[in-house]
Image (cartoon, rainbow, N blue to C red; front, side, top):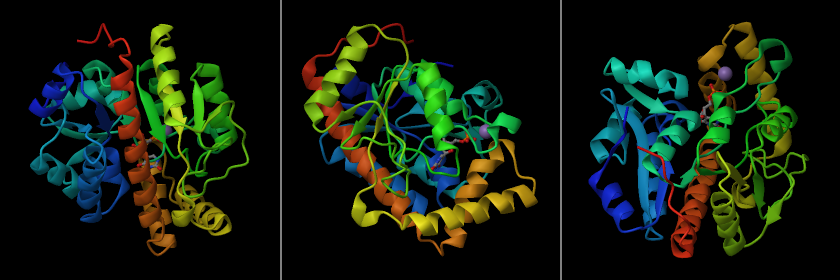
Length: 310
Ligand code: PSU
Ligand code: MN
């Protein structure tokens, strides 16, 4: 299951240049066609704008690929027979020659294998509300704890239990840094009211934290929270109401397991008359921008390369 790196990703890696991993579930299952293709291309452009190389990750016809061409991005965006592929799904999707859009969990795993130290996403999965009964906890958390990747996200939206998500991350020992914030951002809004342990306001310190994490030989990844820019944030009370309605609809229709997160995202878009989509797009681009700038600083710091990946 060795991932195949695109020529551009290989070249960048060989020259020690900056690379940013991007996930593909946001393309296939997070946004509707054709906005999703537009976003996938815009995310790559945001990374390139800083001189870094984007590496969008997915499984194409059974091959885990790091760095995709436009045709692959379009296929993922059309989402015709594209599976939502978390870490546990990788062996099946690869062995049967299927095409899978990788979640944060699967993207972290493949980015680690490819030796890419920085990964930008929109929001991470976490502990779902009601998890004390359902045990629905996203595999994103376990994989972030295992993969040697710095994950840049706008937090997690309150379709999840954000307080329990922070507790789970603490138990897993994942280092958390707020970039310009001292509380967990709640995806569509910058505020959750839940304090996080460390705040950093400049890129140099952020890069040095990633370097320290690496040179201490710490296993696993770290999480960088980058709140949505205020100009794009949605009103918190409206978001709470849409989430409550979306959760009710999921319960009434008995939607659970891997279908739950995509269902809730689509419901929020529907209930908000599409207002969640530009906010989601803005925060994802904002994260790609920060990840690219961070990748540049890390490359300049001469951080020891990841070893042990195949
Ligand atoms: N949260 C979002 N947008 C997303 C996802 C989560 O705000 O697109 C996607 C990510 O790919 C994430 C996955 O890794 O959903 C988590 O799914 P689950 O809860 O089934 O682990
Ligand atoms: Mn789940």
